[in-house]
Amino acid sequence: MKIWKIFQKKADFYGLGNKYNVDPLIIRIIRNRDIIEERDYDKYLRCDLNEMYSPYLLGDMKKAVDIIVKSINNNEKIRIIGDYDIDGVTSGFILCDALEKLGANIDFDVPDRIIDGFGLNERLITKANDDGVDLIVTCDNGIAAARQVEYGKSLGMKIIVTDHHEVPYDIVNGEKIYRLPETDAVVDAKIEGDTYPFKELCGAGIAFKVICAVSERFIPDEKERKDFLREYLGFAAIGTIGDIVPLKDENRIIAKNGLREVNRTTNLGLKKLIEVNMLSDKEIKSYHIGFVIGPCINSGGRLESAMKAFKLFRCKDEGEAMLMAENLKALNDERKNMTEEFSKYAFEIIDNEGLYNNSIIIVYLKGCHESLAGIIAGRIKEKYYRPAIALTDGETMLKGSARSIEGYSIIDELIRANSIYKEENGEELIAKFGGHKMAAGLSVEADKLPLLTEIMNSFHDVTENIYDEEIMIDVNMPFSYISMKLIGELDMLEPFGANNKKPVFAEKIQRIERFRVFGKNNNVISMRIISENGSMADATLFKDKDEFFDDIMNFYGKSKINDLIQNMECDIKMKVLYYPVINEYNGTKSIKVVISNYMWYN
Image 1 (cartoon, rainbow, N blue to C red):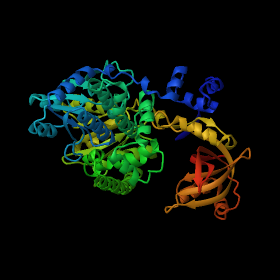
Image 2: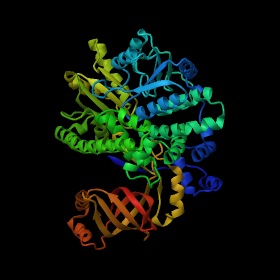
Image 3: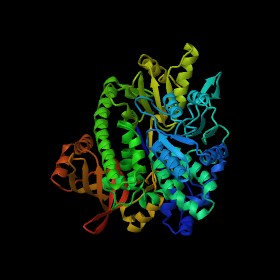
């Protein structure tokens, strides 16, 4: 059930508005993002790079830097091992490219999604050893690879883990026993007892911190060092936004300043990726990273190899970079078509079998490419507002991804289910898993899937109200309050994402005029809407026309639909949630609102 609620947080909106020379409404929205202290308003609005925390507050950072610097000075062979998603690719690029420029003998490798699965593994370690690698540095993985690290150390290699995922643990007699890999250094803010003030950096954020620390040893001049780090700040922003970590505190500073670097990037591969997606004349914002550029970066690792995106960002030849960028875009287009097909398949299974009533929806998708499992699990979560696991066939067992909702830590529940089974049967229920509260990956033997489903749906301490999806409204704002200046000030709140959602405004509508439908799939609705107080706005709603008509008919009957089709004035009362934007057409700018949700009322 969707529940609309209005934020009721208090602050001196007018006083702070005067101080920062912004509309009080801007202060109200920032307060709604749980900003309380005045210094935090200042930090939120300024996003000053000087307010980033010292990398040396991360446990083992000094150890890691000492080892890396010594390896560079001794010309030892270093291999960065990343992961096949956007965070793994960007963190791998940051470490590999920056350390090479600082003099390292370095290269990059990444797991094969089909052959290896997630993270550091024996095949990659054996390959590194055969290639004469002296030091392995992981990024965006490794914290759950205790056994693999032990194997690498037995071969005589040095191993540094840089990661941001939760430390795996077992529950023994009700107590958490953490399983840390015994490496030469582990850099992960989520390690129990780590003193780093901010725990939500992504893999690319951690990699950027490592480069900040290492570069101090080689580039003593502060201005020269800042110039050196600019490009990597941009890639840290791409990883931060793409990995959907909370855009608050230090992540907001990285994303805000990093997006500026993305918009003026000199990286040939990134420029070509922007170009093939028709974004060269646009300001790149968090939306473009999350829904255009990011999926292209991910598509290589999903359907072929993550090395495609990595090599694109390292490419120095313009023609070759263009071909590589076009290839990634084509892969992403293919991925989108496959996702649509198997999402529909998943919804049919869930609806036919009544799985939408379960505490967690677990669905097996025969024939689905395993790289799509995470996207489909996310779509299931959005449609049914339930934590979801989508599984398909791997090389030897089922492999899949999980996505969760607020109030349900998917990694804790997987650990819980595994511990219960292990305690009773003396073996693992889940062959391999890792992740964090909102997302995880796992592998499970096919014959154990029914047990996994049964155990995870038997936890009766999961409270029912977590399945009520709360949509929080920032302000009830009449259309007459919107201005070009206000929309400009709303841009100050960018980048939007997790924990800094795009503001939501509400208004009551009593009439629709100028109704039109666009798009090859009839899923873009344009209309003029008139509010209760008589103010009007041109509005766009991205929704299938037939679904919209069905909603109207179920509440009002068919006559209202006829009025709309005939483009007559139609008295329809509905509450809308919206966001104002500036529309530019033939050099003329105008204000319109984009409707994100609606409900009827009498």
